[in-house]
Amino acid sequence: MGMMKEFKEFAVKGNVMDLAVAVIIGAAFGKIVDSVVQDLIMPLVGKVFGGLDFSNYYLPLNNQGTTLALAEAKKAGAVLAYGNFLTILLNFLILAFIIFQMVRLINKLKKAEPAVAPATAEEVLLLREIRDALKK
Image (cartoon, rainbow, N blue to C red; front, side, top):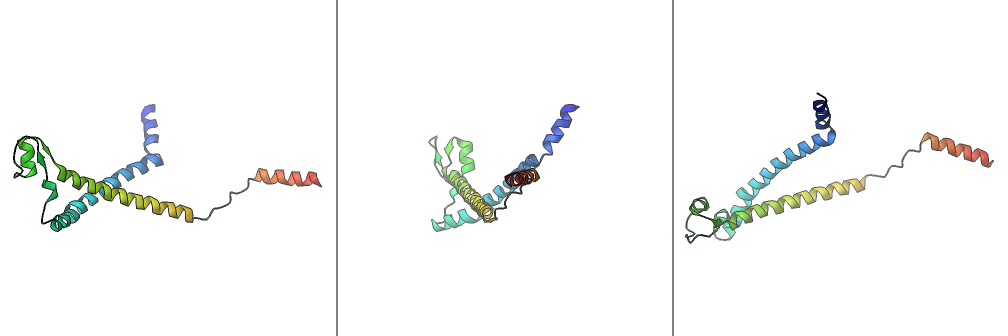
């Protein structure tokens, strides 16, 4: 029973709960960015490059033609799906840039906080009074 109590104390510590919340929010944010890239950005990029769908770009590795859709080509054999990789790479770059901006903003906010002088301990004040009294 002692191990369960110890686990409960560990699980409800602030850092563990903060980490759990961060992972959940991060996963949800990742889905949002994934949707933005796949549903908004990549169609616009495809339109600029002549209506191309990057998610279906691949190189077949087994002498088949590239006329099949990516899912069908994967069933037929090995493929190098570089279009899907480009989409995921764009997801990563967007996430990394947003996280960088968030960290940068937090660091600016931390620097903007005025430095508060640490309170002098009562013992230190008493020692100073004794020192000053001995000097006289």
